[in-house]
Each structure stands twice: as structure tokens, then as C-alpha cells.
Length: 162
Image (cartoon, rainbow, N blue to C red; front, side, top):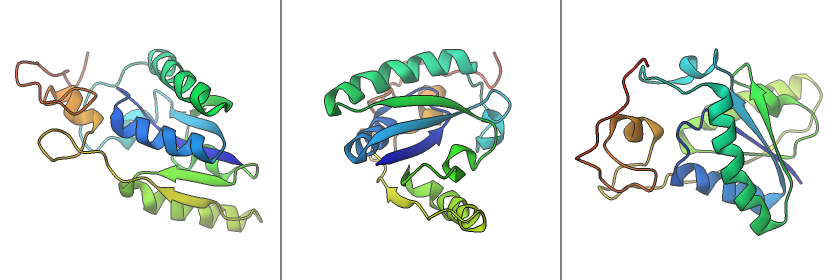
């Protein structure tokens, strides 16, 4: 099975790792990583997002470890539009988080318009932090939690711009 998922992944955290684990359980994985131009447009809050090459290197390191565990292949591709790579015919499944299910529905609409089979959509629940709220890159960047969801009251966050 060929599995797609996408995001900005800055920084990668345990919620992302849950998505990756599910994707590799299903098959070989292609991750769409938002371009430098698209990344700010996908943010709910204005914050600095590291350059594509830095995010890609960190993402590939994490994916390589998980891919080895499942004996799977992976590829990271640049996303230049929100529906990205998942509208391409070769994919069988799409792994999403709960807040991106609307995007998955739109992707399947586009696939239908293009004569492609719909993707099986796998919704992976959020991973919660120590305080019971979800782990998110925004919370990490603000300095509230670390990548595992542990509270970090002594940390300063990242500015909206570098």
C-alpha cells in the first residue's frame, strides 16, 4: 500500500510520530513537506517556521528510524499547494490528524474529479501533553511544552520572525 501524509513538521513531535507510525503500519510512505511559501499559509498563528531544508533534514532523520522498524520505504517531497501530493493517482491511503479531515475530504473530491479511486483516510487521534492539552508545534515553539509534551515553564519560545 502507498500512503501519503503532509505537513510543516516544525518541529517534529510525538503527535507527528503517531501519524508516521500509523502510516508505516499501512505501507510505504510519501510525506509532503510544505514549501517555505506554503508553510506560513497553513499556520493558525503567526510564527517563525524554519527553512524547508532544515525541516526536511530533521523529518528524514525521524522517518528513517521509524521506516527501519517497519521495513518500509519513504520519500519526502515538497508541497506547494494544500492538497499536495495526495491527489496523485498512485496513493491508496492518507493519514491525517483530526483537524485535517476536511482537507482529506477535499482531496478525495479532487481525486474523483480526476477519475482516481478515493483514498482510505486514516484519522490518528491527537497525542496529549502532560497538561492534558494536545501536543502541537505551536505550543512547542511558544515554549509551553517540549516535543514529548512535557511542560517547560522555564523555556522561552520562538519569535514570530527570526
